[in-house]
Image 1 (cartoon, rainbow, N blue to C red):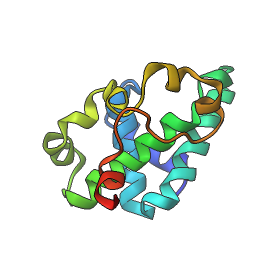
Image 2: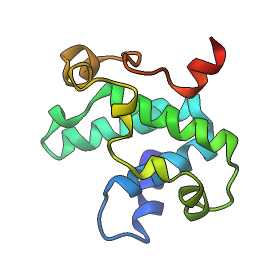
Image 3: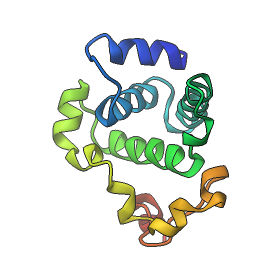
Length: 132
């Protein structure tokens, strides 16, 4: 499975690539290859797409990885058969501002977060809190 295959599948039923489509693509990746393998698949695909569009500065490492991990965490606990069922059962994932629950805006705006993975500084992710 390639990023382009995932993108093609999502866009077959959509006119634009918004946040819901991003979550859908990530859900497909997680279901297809698992969360750990989906991290580079989705992140590299988004980074390449941003470069191709002439906007490489739009890529954000921490945000990309965090979204894959969040979708993966929810997919592990909700084996919904379709994306619409998954989205209905996990509406918080459709909120673009969800990461602000875990990160301060200053942290997400930092060069360090943009270039590499940064742990949440507001609240741990659910799987981090469970492991503590």
